Image 1 (cartoon, one colour):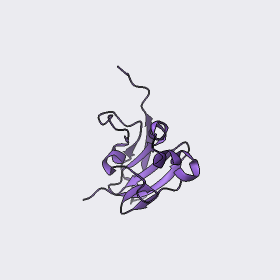
Image 2: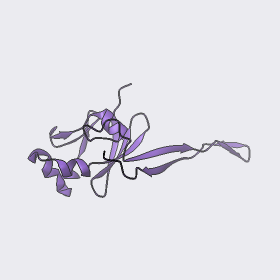
Image 3: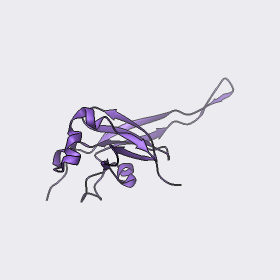
Image 4: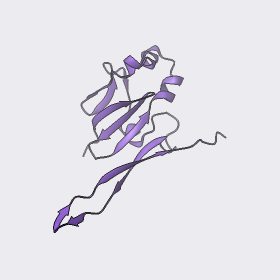
Length: 125
């Protein structure tokens, strides 16, 4: 199975909630990338109206006509900054499942909820 972006939704401050075809969700913060970008092809996406113009094409999340696009595995990990491949995602959603229950003899489906976790600071040695 190839990994694909199924849905993407803008969240405030340059974040995107991304749903993949394997059922995983990631909230990816593009703010740090845009802050350090120097290429005008990328810096124009610091304007929120431009940043919000992302779309999904052939399972990839992109801006413009392939102007800004990230490897699907980086998005899936929730970590898009180069040179930081081994770092934990800044923000992830963890899936938790409740067990199926019976109610008056009928089996009900367990609920799925997502718990937001943030990584609090890093050592810069």
